Image (tube, rainbow, N blue to C red):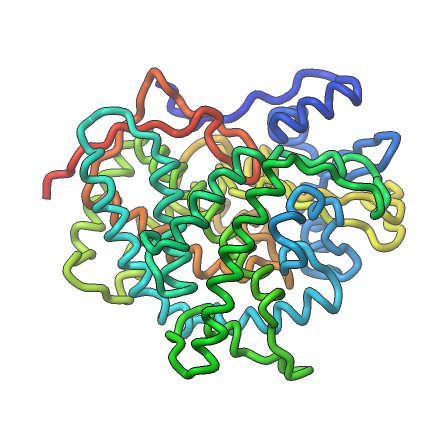
Amino acid sequence: MSRLPPKPPAREGRVSLWRYLRLFRRDILSAQPARLYRAWMAEFRTPFFRSFLCNQPDLVDLVLRERPDDFPKSDRIREGLAPLLGDSVFVTNGATWKRQRRIIDPAFEGGRLRDTFPAMWDAGRAAADRLAPLADGEPVEIEAQTSHAAADVIFRTLFSIPIEHEVAGQVFESFRAHQRTQPVVNLGALLPLPRWVPRFHRRGTRATARQIRDLITRLTSDRMAQIADGTAPDDLATKIMTTPDPQTGERFDTGEMVDQVAIFFLAGHETSASALAWALYLLALYPEWQDSVADEAQAEIDPRRAYFSVVGRLRFARDVFRETLRLYPPVPMMVREAACPERFRDRDVPKGAQIVLSPWHLHRHTRLWDNPDGFDPGRFATDNGKACLRDAYIPFSAGQRVCTGAGFAMMEGPLLLAMLVRDYRFEAVAERPAMPVAHLTVRGREGIWLRVTPRAP
């Protein structure tokens, strides 16, 4: 078995626009040419729009940190996600987005994150318990298990209910159905269609999105009533729904909260499930690292009680998870739009051009990282790793639009990884190797299959 983690083959040579669109809709990653792994910038022209992929750290910094308001999120992002996400913080811009962040961000500050830890711990223990009947050495599709675990974390921390709750379970199943109906890219993201032109989302996509939003509306309406009665639990949903905008004093109404819960579930569930599954797969490929994580977890984790201080002591698990996010960033590409004419690397960038920032390519850039395609969690202690961590590592974006749940994810991921590896050994299935493919997030083309067996205490 290869010692390099799996990487999709790059597109060979030039292709026609029609061929490129077909490749892009099937898999964003393998549709791209190999030169993007060493290019500082690349321009793509179509009859409909121009796009510029930027890997040069100075350009990435300009777009995300220095002048983010001049590079708003592209409206093309919302084309495929609109039925589910509405006007959530993930797709809005300008004053609307800033208002949403002013209300949401306080719920994810350091002290509040500490308050979510017991619920996260309980979800980790439940995930380990669910694996017990599957730990017989037969192949297990591990993405299904990490998806279940990540959804459980979201419901426990957001609404104080486990995944076994009737409504939570229905949302989870509806979301899995939504994933199956959702194409990689909606046609509206590739063609400059006027707003009045119908987007022709698949019937199944519209139906599952409606089901999810109806279920979330039930949870949100119930919580509104509990808040009014003074009986609401002190969780993330209550915090967000009771936080007024410091500038206007307004709070989210039920409809706005439904939009936000939808993106919390998509971002907090889908991305965490992807990262955790790839982390377990990498540990299966590199058993020496798995043993280090397991030894650390067995020394530091007492399964009989939850204690927040353990988060800072899971150093091997943290470095493995951080390296996983480098190799398999859940969101492989981010698209911004130039609000005014620009000039990048002596090229004219017209107003309206799409600015593509690709964590996938930036994290594997051959002119930035040592051993860019290799798995090396220890790299972040080196001079090169420290420099790249600062200048070329954006799994959660950066600047004012950095993912509000980044701290949450970096607590959840290493904790769940350590809890699972503490109890079980994971081995790769040679006849079913994983290959990354970009759908909503970077997942396994045919799933991620591992053999799971109990680990001796």
